[in-house]
Image (tube, rainbow, N blue to C red):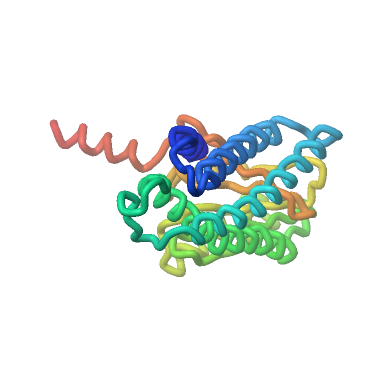
Length: 257
């Protein structure tokens, strides 16, 4: 999307003599998106230290600027034409394609802010809350997990240990079992946290396999006790995974014979 935004703005840069701000708006918002993607990648390669703090500061600065620029662009876009304007009838205004792209870009960005940010903020908060409910008298290692279903529900879980150590259930699996028992079968994200403060800790191998049972396109938020998180994916954490699709292929092969 950032590249498309930059390209469309650049293509029509000299075609909006009455309102030149729209192509400029699209170019800058696209550049900000690319910078954020690069900073996010850089952040995931850094460990705790000075450069991580610098990276986070840069991300925060770009986000603040993007929000201000988005609001400014909203004024420019909505103050010119109604959504159904006819560019051929008004002379040298921006082409209808460019205007409608900017119009819907604003609409979709606004909706994503309203829906996505509160949702994932709550997901992280819920996993931190679930950690406090952990039953771990033997390891003293509390873990919390919160799963986001496709329908927007958040289901939490914590690790539950047992005197027969092998019967211990991890937080991620507790959350999955609760979600399935409540009728959910489709999930989009999970946030996981523990008490380790200086690094991001992911699910164990068994939990990754259990998550894979319900699809490979999970977003996984590895969360520290202070609420900071690192976003990764199940596909990245469990490459070349065994999944239900392999059983289906094997079943089809056997049916041939």
